[in-house]
Image (cartoon, rainbow, N blue to C red):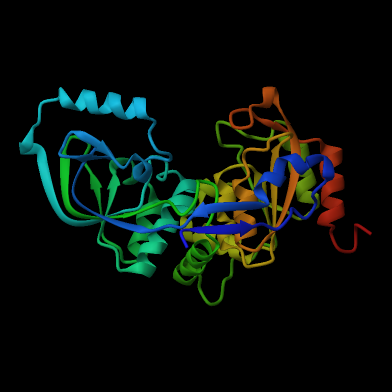
Length: 339
């Protein structure tokens, strides 16, 4: 079979009036990930070419397949470029696991590592090829080193001829997950980074985005006061090393935050723990963390915040304090107080 079907758990606090935000995600069908071997592929600036000129396989290195006009424009442009064969470097065997966004935290764990996991299970990967913008991403190099995988960063000023290239297809449309692959990644990384006696115990963790340039909570002080009342420890993950993030999250029973990359760390929760996502009211598109929590068998809760002009990605979020307090009191009461 070339396809697989996903049936997702419902959000724990789903209201009928919010059904339109989630119902299209309850069942999805995707093409199964597979391994494709190609001979004599040229790579330049993170793009594939056949014969050094003809654009090839954009669906493997881009988030989506290039449309015909874009393909044609790139081919025409390359036909008029002068070859500089002195800058061509030959690589005999290599593997491909990345797209143009997978250097970002969420896409690295959600997109690229599913492809890495598939390669590890299928065969020991050949040299993994990445672009220069992965080089300063500690979470990329640390994980690849921890898994004992070989990799190099390609120079944009060079063209590479790969004589034998193993290409993984995407496991699913970005923001969706092959349950087996993502759970195997979770287990693999926990085994790699967790110590037997984890001393970093925090019961309830809230991921702060207040140092980010977007999707911050606009009424921070009153919301953080409420979180403090409900025993949440507010943490800026960007100030922690990867191993510290993993150990902290794995100790928690509840992980919450505004829609953003930090919620990717639910990968390190144990099954049946709770996830809270603050998301924009009416946002029916950005369901990646709902999808991830379902794939990992976690309990997903959501809280809707006000967003300016339906700009769910770029604007700050206003959290109604009374509604938020009622939400926490109902679903995450503090023992001996909320009765």
